[in-house]
Structures are given as C-alpha cells and as structure tokens.
Image (cartoon, rainbow, N blue to C red; front, side):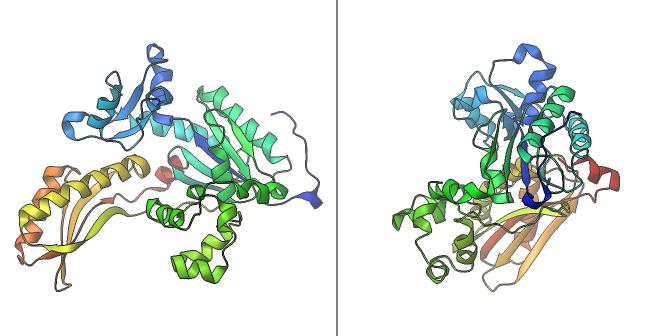
Length: 358
C-alpha cells in the first residue's frame, strides 16, 4: 500500500467517507458477461411474477429506469432492457471481498445495504480524500468494480457528496467549506425531506438550504413539528449522528391507514396489492440478501382492535398475502382502518453478519 499525505494531529477533525458501489448487482453481471457491456441491463424479478428491479446500470437509467421500479414498467420505458435474475450468492461473495478491503483502512463501518456503507476514517493518519481514492482503487484492482465516494465532516455531507460525481468518482467537502456547500444545495437533498415536505417548502418559496436557513428553530418546529429541530441543523450541514455498526432488523413491513374504513374483503384486496408492491420495492432496495422465515398481514379495525395473520414457510408473493388477508379479515368482519404487510427475517449468524457489512 502506497504512502499518503498525512494530516498533522492538531488539524485532525472527524472525517467520514460514504462509499457506494456503482450499480453493484448490474455491474457484477456486466463484468461476468462482457457481451452485455454498453447495453441496458436490469437485475430483478420477472414481469410475469410482478417483479421489481433491484438495480439497473446507467445505460438503462438513460431511459428513466431505476431501482425498485416494477419490471413491466421498466420494459415499457426501455423495451431493449435485458432483465437478469438475481445471484445473491455471487453478490454476497463480492461484498465479503470488498468488506475485507474496507477493514484494511478502518474498523468503524456502518453498512446501509449490501453495496453501500459509511466509514469513519478520522483516526487514520492519511488525508481523507487520498484515502478514499486508495480505497476505491483497491476495490477496483481486486474486483474490477467501480465505486463512488463522498468525503465530509459528517454523514449528511458525505452522503450528499458521494452523489456529486457518480459513477466512478469522488467529491470532498472540507469542514471550512460546509457553509458555502450548503447554501445553494436543494432542500430535497437533506435526509428526512420527502415529496410531502418538499411541496410544503415550495409553498413557502423555499427550494435551497440557504433560503431555509432564514427560519428560526421555533418557526421550523411550528411548521414541521419535532423534525423542525433536526431541520434547523441539517440545512446548515450539522449532523451529529455517529458512524456505528449496523444491527440487522428482524422484520420489514409497510402499512397504510385509510381515510375511509374498508368494509369488504374486495376493497382490502385492492389496497393490499398497492402495499405489496411497496414492500417488494423496499425488500429490493434494503434487504434483498436476507432469508425470509415468515410473512404476515396485520389489520386494525374501526374499533382499534387488531389482528395479525402470520405463517412460516411462505414466499412473499401476492397470492400468499391475499390468503393471509382473507384469514385475518374473516376473524371479525369489522370495517378495516389499517392494513400492514411484512416479512420476518432469519436471525443472522455471526458469519452472516460479517458477510453483509457492505
């Protein structure tokens, strides 16, 4: 490993690297099948099984295709899209190789998914940008896969910075440049701001963080509740969340509370299909490599009682969720005010936990 420019101890500050493998699953497929190079490629479920894309390469993204998109919709936008099935044994193997490389540089790693992680490199003697470049080069030398990185004084800045020069690039925001970097940054880049919050901010004439900084903390709390406390700091580039090892979640679910109660099984089934698609998208993005042990449907009735139908050994298919919905609904027949669908994961062994560090 080559020598890097070092940073004097008195100048050391917190240094976070956000590392993101470029189109990880699709990149592995193209690497292993050179004939696919330059063609639009997606990885995920087949159209006839109501599948969703886990990821796609940049050639596909030019057509508006993106991860978590239903496969049938992706093929409508890009008829020449090559859709390949997932090979999680291969992806986990590559992730383990990359994980070993990361541990050569720091022991403080927080995974976000199989292909994305935060690294706290504050204790490393090298300059953070040079270190990030060496990490990316080491990954490419070993796997022939490219990655992008953001370097900043906290997780917020590092995450945003990693998106600036994708793919196969990196961008650094030094502590003294944070104020300038945040001023013209679109508010949508801040974690926690979704479409609803963005619309609310647009109604107030706010599109960039510099405009949001004009509001006091009490004003933001009045507008956004408790999130306003965080928003006051985040729009200034302040983020005190530490980088910490991930604890795998035991389950993943999505639910919806309805403005009007659902009174028939047919109405519930219609809503169930929408929730099913949302759950499949979340699984593809966040937990695609985990083994599922159970699937469940939760109902909350108009009198606020609730019931859950759960079964082991079922695949997360729409048909299985419909069966559980029918079972849960038949228990009371009461009007339904909330439906939730979800899956429970197998508890990881210590070896499995290490495999998913990136």
